[in-house]
Image 1: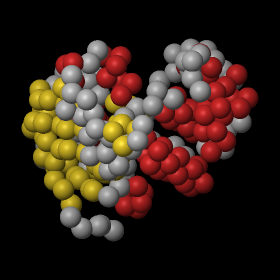
Image 2: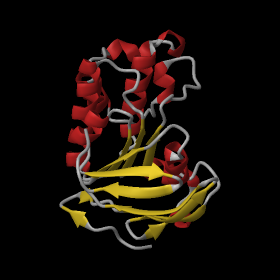
Image 3: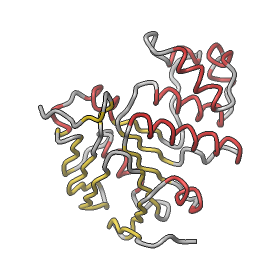
Length: 218
């Protein structure tokens, strides 16, 4: 297995997508280097989420996905999904209590720091999942995802259920995580202004093809 490049003690993550095909989508190719945030938009049903789910290896697909020179096939499923952090628009909660969804070995100080950054009280970890609002679920799902220290973030309409203050908090937290971990980020959003804030490269899916937009758009 290839050894990823490093800067200090932080892995520099490069995600390569080669000729991905799933349902009506593709073949698509894209490289997202470390430190890069890439936006993805397109009409509903164009295949944005299909592409993310293929990258996360959640759906059958053709083509290759490579992380730091290592093909997906050289990782186990759990290993891959820790390195490639996928957060869908609606997060999944399988236990009765919030704390059940966090590994006992996690850095508790870091979790408490992230809770504060997202305007959540520490006591919410003891709450039942049934009592959570949609916004609380999504913010906690982000913290749960980051606790795995993923090298790539796939964010699918992450802030759709949040108000403007919490959108700012989430964007700030992700930017800080990206800077600290030197990870690659792929954002899906229908909010054009948000994508201009969070990404340096912009793509759109049209008729099953991935097109880069050189200029900012209104």
